Image (cartoon, rainbow, N blue to C red):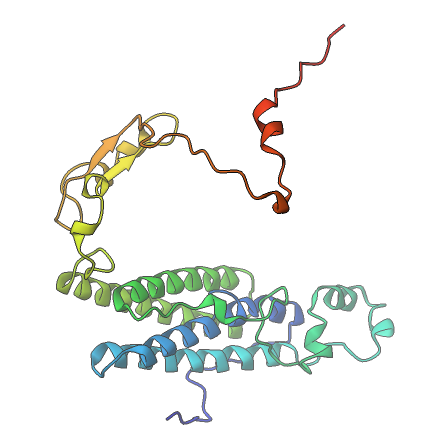
Length: 286
């Protein structure tokens, strides 16, 4: 069960309205790495854990906190939209400053949401569950969580640099700090699971069924060999079950494929045309 507490987890009050910034702030609310995404990702991961315990509680605790962050951002966006000049637009636009605001703000904040936040990103794309990952494998999921928090913190830091409003910055500094904690907690959980299982996901799949001769080989597909200058190219593998090797000039391991012609009713280019095709002669330079 969930209970709504009316107080915010942290304050969300700008010094003054700013409809343009409200549009920007939508990104970390409803964007790919926004608070809606991480809230739904953690909660669905938690609900998928078959059994109780610390990992389920960690997911549910963090997912619930992210719901609080959604509320903070929605409150901040609404307050940034307070006083937005959306009445007599033609008259308001005679002021160059107001005109710039009208030209830059998201019109859907006035037309669709009634000066409120929306489940959308900064350019109006609606939030989608396609953004979230919940596989049932905790190690794979925790790595996805670490990526989500890293990307989310990066975006909030960029937004911090885009405003001088002390109230907005105060709230963002709280979110940045929580992203720091969440990155650290997912790293800690990842390390613990790796120690219990292995660094390779899934660890339950028989290694005998994979082509072990290339399990620890780095193929060089770049000009030069700079990719060899890394821990991933030499020494024991990170899972402790092999030794890295570097192949600077990889060779094909299979012949060029030859596909059977499609049936006539598919109406592909006839095989005879493909077989007899030649390159056109170069254009005359005379």
